[in-house]
Image (cartoon, rainbow, N blue to C red; front, top):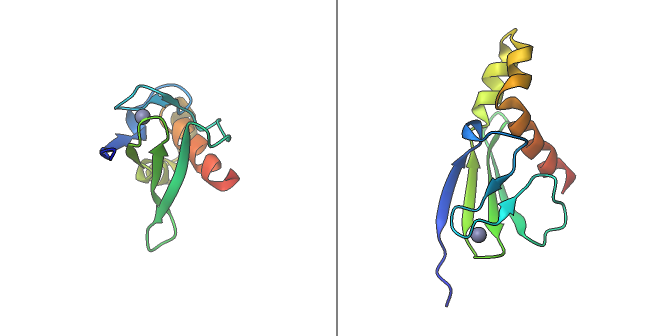
Length: 104
Ligand SMILES: [Zn+2]
């Protein structure tokens, strides 16, 4: 039986456009991959106010479960006037995953 590992990825700590290597097997997990071949979204957790709390992914390569967190940061940036800041840093990464969620 394959052992399941559970990891937690804070999206605000990722650079680039939202892709990151699986912490266990190194497979690149990208929000632009809609094929469900490398990974699959297995659950989405919402907060009481309907904002996104976390996305749970299953890496199909190694069977790890990965929790994507950090979505609160987007709310905080969205509430501020610093819209350029939103585009500059983690906002893009978070948006990419939110859109991935909506597209699946
Ligand atoms: Zn993996």
